Length: 118
Length: 114
Figure (cartoon, rainbow over the protein chains, first blue to last red):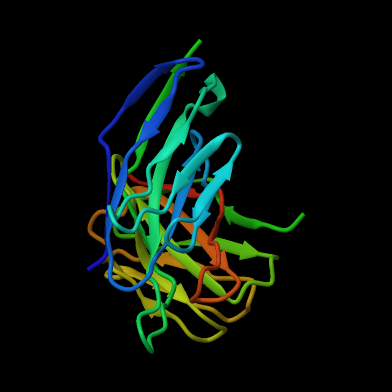
């Protein structure tokens, strides 16, 4: 079945440091890939997404590129801020195989806690 | 403003009691979902619904029940059969069930069994 593996956390950085959170996946067909962010005590917010190979999703300085050859969707940001402290989830949505129809289930990684210090 | 609301934010239940979590959306989305989140884990799908009066079990449906009588509403009942109900529950919706539609999440309900 589908699965998502994220790098283990927690990750602690100083403000303005470079961020990478690794995400690799296993899926059949052509999944869509997502990064969600969860601030303390809140629900999940979509950060960015990519729907096909070589697509780059970007938002608020964060980027991730859909790499089918390495089955990866690593999240990067060039200069983190204290306000970026949150839990980050990589997720995939089952794609449509030949003649198939996805039912839209999201499969999540376990989440990576990011803490940014001033 | 369009969005998803969940209530209550915090809920306490005694063992052996059923409890119902509310989820309402005004996004005119057809599909709705319930997820459970446990510490250090990702989200796991409990139930999902594509249209009114239709819903399907997800990966961990045992001990839970849902209804979808209106497009905007998808309440989740945690029954006394659920062995470990203490968790953070998240409701989500999307335009359609399939394709590349984004799922939008509510703020969540934290359920604690005393």
